[in-house]
Length: 232
Image (cartoon, rainbow, N blue to C red):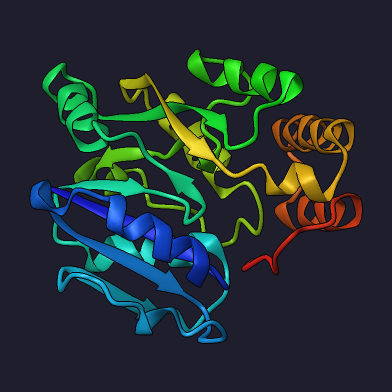
């Protein structure tokens, strides 16, 4: 059974659109994590199998680990609040496990039609340097997730890439499902296309070189203007 974990921060609007689209009949429930109550997301009208949990500590890794700890399913799906999954989302995940995989990701496209953004999205359909980013929606057996030590809560930025690095080191079989998620282009709308891409490339390279997460976070915050307050 599947549990969906959604880390959220000031995401009431996106949650109001996302939660009704998730097919709950095959799910052990949805856990929404927040580190504050500024937008009062808990007041949204939702089915009873959606649980809102408040984290005492900030950070996406803390949120996702907390969600995983209270999730009832034996499969964990980590989904961003501003991402819309395809209608066959849960079925695709079940098929991947039936094929013998222990984890996986989805390809995606942006909610804005742009030649350059379409090029970016095309890279998510195959393995590459950017595989493992949070927008691709990691799904993984809960036992595998726990055996790998969960997300590193000391990783202030790029905790998803750090976890994927351990997945590859431990030779966890994973699949990239070519059935696009719809990802928000809001970061690109608040910054130039070139600025976001160069920043992302720089952060990935510096991460692979071993730069500390705090320095990566500092560089990220200096180079990019976020359309919403980051939760890290």
